[in-house]
Every structure is written in C-alpha cells, then in structure tokens.
Amino acid sequence: MIKRYVKGAQAERELAKQLKELGFAVIRAAGSGGSISTPDLVAIKKGRVLAFECKAWKTTPRLKKQEYEEFRGWCEQAGAMGFMAWKNRGWKFLGVKDIPKNNISKDGINFSDLMFIINV
Image (cartoon, rainbow, N blue to C red; front, side, top):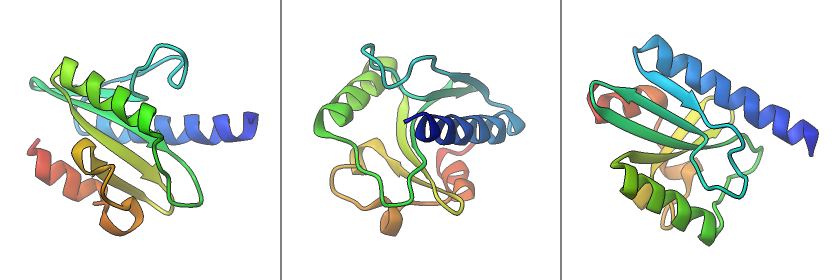
C-alpha cells in the first residue's frame, strides 16, 4: 500500500512540475482519495481551471463509478475542465466526459496535445 501511495504521489508531483513550468498555479490536494472528494491536482492559468485525477498503474486504470461521479461533480461545481491522467511510459489524458466510454491506453492524448487542446 505504501509503495503504491509513493508511486502515485511521485507521479502527481511530476505532473505538477510540468504544469508549473508552463505557468500554471498548481495545487496538489492533501488527502486526495480520502473521505472528502477532491481531485489530485488543480491547475489554474489565466482563469482556466484544470482538475486531474492521477493514476500511476502498470495496467490500464479505471475509475469506479462513484469515484467518477464525484470527480465529474467536483469539476462541474468548480467550473473546471477535468481529466484522468495516467502515468505509464509518459502521460496520457482523457477528458472527464470521455472516461466512462473510452480506454485511456488507446484513446488518451499526450501532454503536448492536451496543452494544445486547452489552448494555453
């Protein structure tokens, strides 16, 4: 359990660093995955709010239905663009609306494409 937590936390810090280098203000949520549902990372730049649920698994990650609903609801309430972020030989991203119907390993986009799409 500890090893998995450390791996996930390292991945979150890596993504936070990449976003900071592009001028985002980044917050890594303390206790993400706890009883209060918050995204792992929130990044803000020029009024654009991004929320990330990060996974660092060997196999293709999935969000449980309740996790997905809470994440989607948080993004809606905050006015954030939500993404599942998967670290496995680089980063792949899926938009919150695409999470239930797509496979991130096949359909996810890379970091540079994500930055192009969100236009920052």
